[in-house]
Image 1 (tube, rainbow, N blue to C red):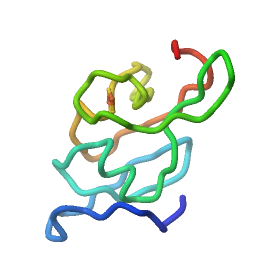
Image 2: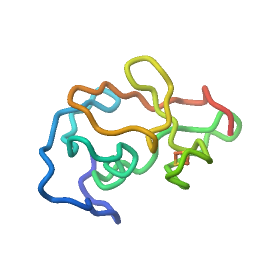
Image 3: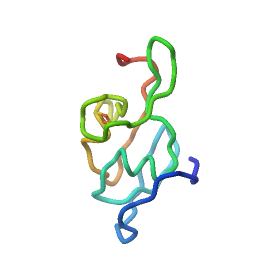
Image 4: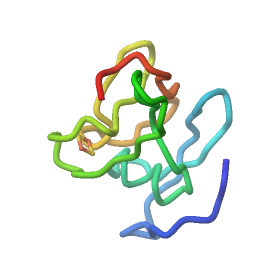
Length: 99
Ligand code: FES
């Protein structure tokens, strides 16, 4: 996963826990917002649209735009409405959502 990001973590003191995104290992801050943590980790997008196939990334960060949809442990969820927990297994949807 890329390490460069225009975003920074709010707290540098949070414990980092292992998660997976598309089979790649990542360390994210335990208990912090999942979408913000993925952006700060350099993840540039979370899904592709079914129509155009364009990549989408978290935008509103308040549950309204659905651009942060991501599959977690087999269930599609809004990353901006979740917190980081150890052992999350995440997959970026490819055209399975509206938009
Ligand atoms: S970033 Fe808009 S719904 Fe999650």
